[in-house]
Length: 373
Ligand SMILES: Cc1cc2nc3c(=O)[nH]c(=O)nc-3n(C[C@H](O)[C@H](O)[C@H](O)COP(=O)(O)O)c2cc1C
Image (tube, rainbow, N blue to C red; front, side):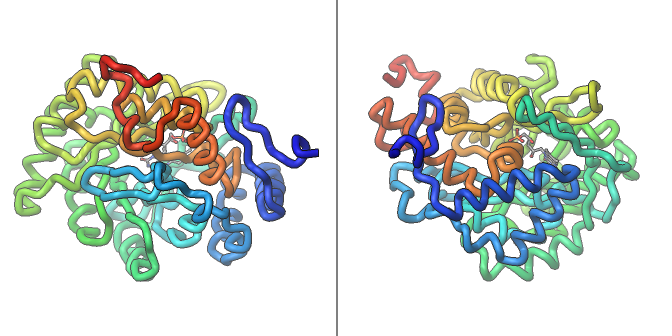
């Protein structure tokens, strides 16, 4: 009977599903029957309505002190799992999303001006691979609306917010810098940190900004506009660069003293849908990027691990390779509103297996001579 009542996680821990847990799973299965973008909007409306608060995961009583971690420049987090950029592009629903237990949320990508993004359909599921392909193209309501939305919620926020900024499609590439600076200046003081997105595959030419020269220009321009402050600015990179190009961008980011890097954005695919692929097929690629980056900065530059995290074991692998914390997107689509709770339970099982008491201790352990048992 015991085994029927418990949901087994392959090779990991188990959790006892509550009634609300089952309701959450049923709701996710229903949403997945709708076209992806429709189900995203419906899910956001449900969260906004507060309906999902009734099935709030019992995170607090289950959360062990051992899960606390420190994200340099952002602060201490009660656990390492944040929501990746792109889910709440307009910072409309941070409180609702937070009720699913995320320890922090990255909102955006927001551009200076509102834009409608690419024509639909532009989001596709690849359920058999636990993947998504998107070519949304930074559909968002622009910085002014974003600021209003964030201000409306800021008094009720109990966790840090990152703001991911991008360039408008109509802005010429040689003027891209001014879009990033404009967005950051407009939203100054509203979030805990900024992320400069130069890695989306869905804005023509954007990825060409992932270069040493652009990073240096960006640093110089932001320093002159912001009293020399760039220690709250992260750079988000893609996993499709050659190793040498990737490492030269990491080198520039480290020597310019940016806050850190988010690794990674989606992986560019052409077939069966053109766009950026996320989820399982991205997992190894983005984890290798953590290793490539570490080879350059040797632990000096903080890293956020993102890409293909679908289990607690995936979080463990990102963190031992130097990620101070992680973000998810696709796992939320496939595993539903209890995903944070489930991932934490699995991660805890990973730690127990190895007799590790404090999650913080595993960060970068992969590179130490004395490996974890
Ligand atoms: C539908 C969709 C929209 C996204 N939009 C953005 C975005 O606006 N800005 C950004 O930096 N990343 C965006 N991403 C990328 C995610 O933030 C994340 O880097 C990527 O999905 C890998 O994580 P995952 O495998 O856990 O989904 C988007 C991803 C998806 C699936």
